[in-house]
Amino acid sequence: MGLFLTVKRWFLSKDKVDISVDFAGVRLANPVVTASGTCGYADELADFMDISTLGGFITKSITLEPRKGNPTPRIVETDSGMLNAIGLANIGVERFIREKVPIIKGLGVPVFVNVAGESIEDCVAVAERLAAEEAISGLELNISCPNVKEGGIAFGTAPEQVEKITKAVKKAAGAKPLIVKLTPAVTDIAVTARAAVEAGADALSLVNTFTAMVIDIESQRPFLANRTGGLSGPAIKPIAVYLVNRVYNEVAKPAGVPILGGGGIRTAADAIEFIIAGATAVAIGTATFIEPDCAVRIIEGIKGYCARKNISNIKDLIGKLKD
Ligand SMILES: Cc1cc2nc3c(=O)[nH]c(=O)nc-3n(C[C@H](O)[C@H](O)[C@H](O)COP(=O)(O)O)c2cc1C
Image (cartoon, rainbow, N blue to C red):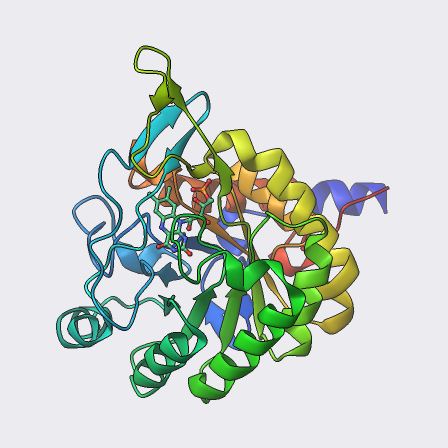
């Protein structure tokens, strides 16, 4: 037996490892997707990498009307991370469908459109428009943006609100799978995760950014015009891994609902931590600002890890955290 295992390990090459996953009924060739708001609407990364090598692409949040977002400065670097207070700046759903959906058709990768709004009705209207577009594989509902006054995080903190908006948008999404993106700014994320799943979410996405502040000590004012922003990047990774594991154990595993995990992923090792914690797929955000094609390196690294650990199918790694 020992000899057999040794021989098998010897022969398991990277190319023999299957890292494809089923994410809420959508097949991803690998578990690596872009995080909303960090990689544009469609092909903005195309100068840096072949987008079709990604497992999936998630767009910037799209709202019913175009939004200018918050005044500047709206980004600031921190130790091991950054704060952003973009405020959901985007071109609005009609322009998105007119200008970006034709590009999305040619990307050769499943595309999920992130939906946001100032009211449930707004989110429903956006979801209804997008549901009619064949090129779109699914929707991600952002109920966790910390940087807008109306809607945003307010939808994601009270479980009754999470349930109400998820139910309404799920209906509007029709046959498209609905991912609900949760905020970490709650006492117990399992409560809001459960509310989303019970209301019909096909997948959960976590985490969005953590509300935070940087102070300019010379002016003694907040650095960002919005005062606060959302903290992302490696600084949040261990908290995000913990929250993914909690949601996996308490809600996602028993309900059979996949998790898109993320927060500070920069390397394949980071991504693998999230997968072991319970994520079926992983989102890469802030790291792309430093290395726009880091997803390629992360995908190869995941394959290499599986081969080294003699894991022929990545599904055998999801949620396999040992005691
Ligand atoms: C500049 C910036 C813009 C973002 N915009 C959005 C957005 O429009 N919608 C959304 O759901 N999340 C948005 N996010 C959150 C990311 O998708 C991700 O959840 C978060 O940054 C944590 O992952 P990371 O540490 O890998 O960046 C944004 C993050 C950043 C840094």
